[in-house]
Image (cartoon, rainbow, N blue to C red; front, side, top):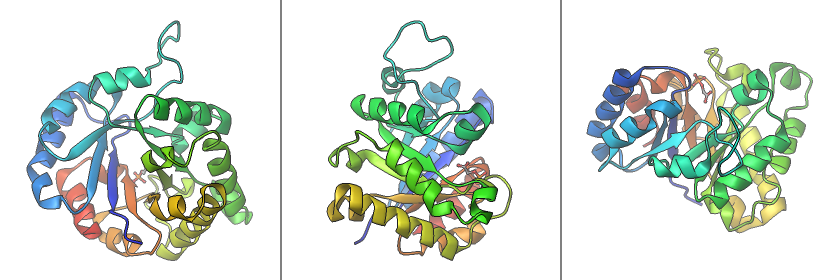
Amino acid sequence: MARKKFIAGNWKMNLNAAGSVALAAGLAKEAASLGAVDLAVCPPFVYIPQVAAALSGSAIGVGAQDMFYENDGAFTGEVSGAMLKDVGCRYVILGHSERRHVIGESDELINRKIVKALADGLDVIFCVGELLAERDGGVTNDVVARQVTIGLSGVSGEQMARVTVAYEPVWAIGTGRTATPQQAQDVHAMTRGLLNTLYGQAVADATRIQYGGSVKASNAAELLNQADVDGALVGGASLKVADFVGIIQGAM
Ligand code: PGA
C-alpha cells in the first residue's frame, strides 16, 4: 500500500535562537515545492515558539525531542505534552537512542511517555534500534521487537494512526555509517510483521516506519526506495536547508 513519506529533522542540542529561526525560515521558503512528503522539524525546547512562528503558514510541522508523562507539578526540568501543544507542537520524538543510552531511559519509561503523548493529542515519533554489540550478537530483531512491544503497550489500534516508528540502529547515528538499504528493509519488514501481530493488517499497512542514522542527500533515495521505508528521521543533515531539502527530494 502507498504510504505518504514522512521526513523529520531532529535538531538535537544544536543551533541558537537566530540559527533556529534562519533554518526554519529557509525551510518554509522551500516547503511549497515539497508537498509530496510530510515534513516536520524538532528543535530544542527553548526554540520551539520561534520556530513555530517562522513555519506558520507552511506545511512543515513542529515537534519536540522529548516530554514527561505528567501534566504539571513538581518535576523540575521536565516539560509536559500540554506545554508542547501550547507552543505549537504537533509531534514529539520519544525513545530516541540518545535518551535511551546517554540519559538511561527504559522501555517502560518510554511507554509511559508514549501513552501520555497520545492522550495529550500529540503525534509520536517512536524510536527504536539496536546497539552495535546487539547487531554483532545477532539479536537485532529481538531488541527491536522488545522495544516496539513494550513501547506500544496500552496504545490502541486507533491511536496507531498518530504513531510513526523510527528504526535507528544506534551504530549508524551520527557516525556516517549508514545501514545498507537491505539492512534497513529487513528490520522494517520485521517491525511491520510485529505490528500485524499486535494490531492486525490494516494498522500494520498504514503505519509509517522511518529510517534514521546518517541519512544524507546522497543515500536518501536508495534507502527510501525500500518497500517498508516510509521516511527518514534526520539528525546532522537536517541542520542545513540544502542538505535537508536534498534528502526530501530523494523521497519524492
Ligand atoms: P544522524 O541522527 O542523522 O545525525 O545520524 C539521526 C537521529 O539521531 O535521529
